[in-house]
Image 1 (spheres, one colour):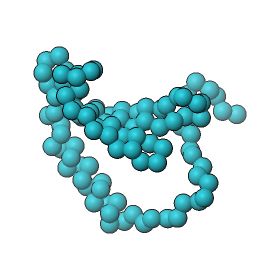
Image 2 (spheres, one colour):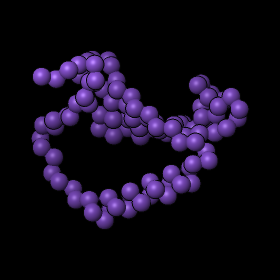
Image 3 (cartoon, helix red, strand yellow):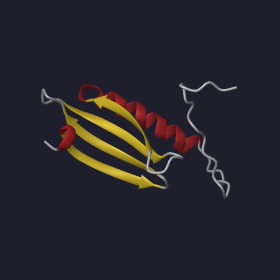
Image 4 (tube, one colour):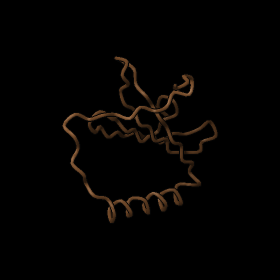
Length: 99
């Protein structure tokens, strides 16, 4: 078993985002999928990481619903031209109150 229970890991680097697909094993020997998105923040050297865990017993149904979403995007998605300067939407910070 690797670091943090990883038994297999692969990644996809695209633009300023990195996606990690980690198969991990818990202390009982059960496997699960951990999907992580990592991207830089406005603070140098800091990254925002978001994670989804899919347990082994849910993988089949997860893939089925995931495939439905992919099929929808393929049928209905249109590629719009991106502006030359990309404006990033910031996630709401729940610790700060907006005026």
